[in-house]
Image (cartoon, rainbow, N blue to C red):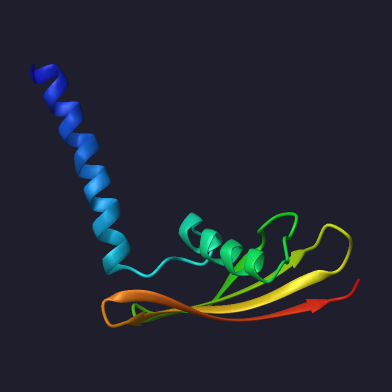
Amino acid sequence: MRLIGIPAAAVAGVLIYRGVRDRLVLPECDSERAKHSLADVLKELRLEPTHYEPITTVSSTKDRVVCHADLPLPHGGTVAADYVFYWNGNKADMKYAVSRKPS
């Protein structure tokens, strides 16, 4: 029973930490969490880049993370995205500005 209990407790601990961490720390610009948020915004705007790199961190504090990305579009051109993660009460929120650049 111990052989199963210790790994199961470790896995549960990691899952709990990830859930709590999302409520305590803003996402880093190149994290999967941030890329997913950006992808949702761009999909809503009907802009779907071929990939989500490079993404740069303009500045970062515990209360605010500022990001920038120039992402290629499938039929030429790029989409420039400037976005900020910040705390809105005890929830992380995102502001963004997106513009399309011709090739």
